[in-house]
Length: 241
Image (cartoon, rainbow, N blue to C red; front, side, top):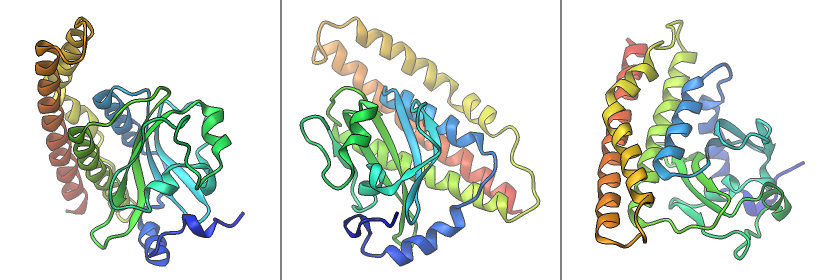
């Protein structure tokens, strides 16, 4: 089925041309590891890396959306909408604010309420897909969370660059990539878990202690994001040698 014109980007031909470099098949477990980590950082049950093709959306990394096929029609995915903007697309409560650009039953059948997706934008300005976080209950995305999602979307694009680099060479995938990543961010992950537990003990999210814990979580998330960028960039350079 052809994609409705209102879901086509203004630079659709350029976008699809840029996408070709990233339509690499084969096993790439680091995408699932990455979205699992993203879900942890945002404390949401679902996180996805998607590639928006001509008529379908390919879930390159999937954490939490277990009933979803690998690809869905473009007019059934909110990621099709998120690539139309350079900014992060947010639906705080899809039950009250449904997206009219796609088939609403696709979202309703999955019980999705909150969606936030940042486009994976190449240096040439083409949005080839999204990094999105999803919840089955409404929520608000704070400004610092919007910034974090945008930074993580840049990391997701680095992962796609790594996969494309691996496809163009006979060099093996860095076997210890995620072992190295988790070693590098292990202290931050432990601290994030501790802070999440402490937050649960607070009577309200706006107590002095709760606000302090949230600041600390943001700081640790920034450390994780920077480390991810460094580790994946180093892996790309290793493959290209």
